[in-house]
Image (cartoon, rainbow over all chains, first blue to last red; front, side, top):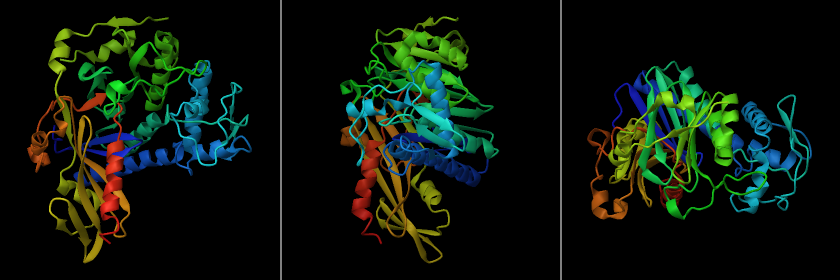
Length: 303
Length: 157
């Protein structure tokens, strides 16, 4: 449990969860400095993409982008591009513009001067990506929330800091959305959504990302939490058939977003997983566990 | 198109992994102090085991406060570093434990962690270092930081 002398692991409360960062193979002072910088990257993503912070890019977009084009940070633009692409490829199943529905359900707060919640239908391509890192909404009442993708992006940015430091290896784990690099693979235990004491399997992660999402699983509220923050954009219902999923992909942003699609589409998500060169494990409410064939090579029995 | 494959959870794995808890040790108090105030040359204990003043070359660099939050299943040691003017400089998790046996709120269960450092860290499921499939809420720590600020933010200046 105690870290070896050539490794350092720290944790901070960020993104509404605990973000763990480990770096290996450098001088201790250097590792501390690198971890500080990686935490800074996570905090920057939070500052840019929080739905709750009034000065974030997301809040500025929600206030102004239906009136005029809004310039955003390169990182925000990158996440929005990925989200719009994911929306298109998933035929609307991945949708960052479900925020008004989540507000109506009480899953997101209404903001100070926010207009009445608009849950009317909106055009499929409500978000217009313009040149010069500018973004415009094609209709009034569009509100975006990057909660389904930004955490994965934050993990990618933090890992990029670790990689850039020249360290031999590293890991970033933001409450189950994680990515690692280095020669020594990281063993990750995937928990059962219904019983956190049980590990479904362990997976070796190296030079890739793994994101996980579960319904009705919260360590503080466990069994009582019946509502999920993942809703189907067409029916606005929480998914009923999937308890949880873990997705492996080359980037944590893509893995994070794909977990939302698997939660909604279940086994039908396989085509999209293939498009993104991702593999997945999903746990149905009836206890069945299914994996994509390419997942298996790195699965080890939990024992 | 490829198909999904049924994955059978081995019964032996379930049995062997079922455990009352999971724990992670990050930094000792001393390590966290150095991390929060790298330039500090001296830490003066103002309140035993809880509040330290960090000094660098005769100037106050800030304050270091150790605190602990207990949730339903979680037991977290963390530290808040305050600037000389009483603003939050950083929040660092030192130790993290979870338990599902209901013992988190029992004083005797908590007592076993008092005075633990990274060198003497208690081992619970020590081979498990990375966990996925769970998004842990940091709400309790956030509330704890607010309490720390309310208690010390003004008083320490």
